[in-house]
Length: 322
Image (cartoon, rainbow, N blue to C red; front, side):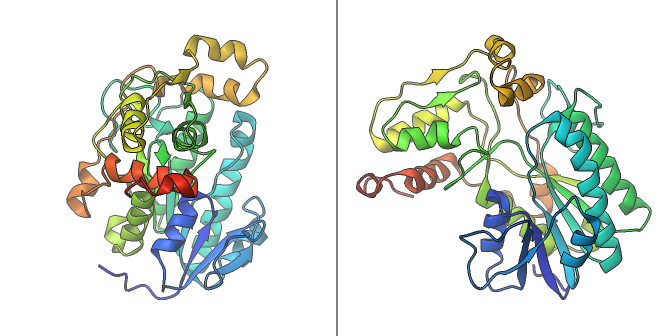
């Protein structure tokens, strides 16, 4: 399926998802927009400087765009999120409306708050805590803009993700699979034996492309990314250790220590309100997306091997089949 929409695709943000999406759109007119030009941006991909917190900047960057992919990350701080996310969303919605561009928001699952069942798109938004409440607020913003006919917008929601070269933004990144690939002990700050959904970044990019190529009728709603069958972090790391043919020893940080260490490590203090993601099974229901688009999420065997290979030394790569 290929979109009949003509014009370029503007990707706001060149983090793991933005980069993978640009790669998945190879051969199509794509521009990256963020404050500074990425050092590793391919020469065949356009770039425009843009500050999402400045409306004029976003309006200028979106000139000529037929579709916008919002894939930015903001500093992981409740204070920053409260002030910056609504402003960024307001600016992007204004640009989409002004240029008649469709909007795809690559979102997370925070807005559902604590749940005991598998997460599905019909769950009500929860004004829980700080960061989940912010995600619920900006969700209402894009949904209201769509319902009023101001924009055509949709959201792709994903849980924690992992993938080749994905480091700081991933629980399974630089402290876990990267450590394993380098022959070191992986570290997790959560319960390694709690089942938890993980999305593979190339799958997220593939899903973004599916929505870019979808008709308008598929907008105005949220979609959950298909994930490989749920496993525990220990099972995923054990798979990696088996691929590398090495023993697995995991270091962990008990969740009861989070508030204490958070007094000295600000980022951990920000995670405390999100412990509901790790103190119970965290599963994502994505049957709606599977029925409409595709259902063959990358198996962990394939995704973990590719991720390990991206982190491994040249000598170690030889024994990793990706």
